[in-house]
Length: 195
Image (tube, rainbow, N blue to C red; front, side, top):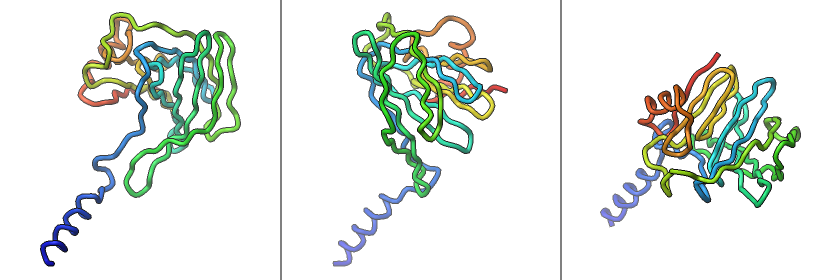
């Protein structure tokens, strides 16, 4: 009987997550290596964010809400699922809650005002994967650019205050964006600061 009690206590203690340790970050599994490029405007801060088809892009405001954007290519349009990223205050683990879905056509901006973090989104481009392996290699799959209070994340982010790119997940243009991600590629997410 004593062995059973010790075994149960060991199992329970193994299930306890200490805040700040082994936190689960919300993510999705891309449908394909094809990419979707979106133009996002949060407040007066614009950014161009590229993400894999079915992958999770993020936009957030410091000390405010975080939103996940999952684009899915559908013939000539893109279906964008907008998710609220929630954080468990006890464990720090993230979860996703669907807020809305919109269909995007090239060149037509859509303003989303009735959500926790209002923003404008426009479909700029979809691109078939070229020269990328079937699954990302290397640790850098997402990078983020912080512009003032706003953070934009994807596999390629171009903003007024900085840029980043994860070459194992996105077709990166040459130059400093590739180097910035490569320098921070020890983690799943590279962050480039801005103004």
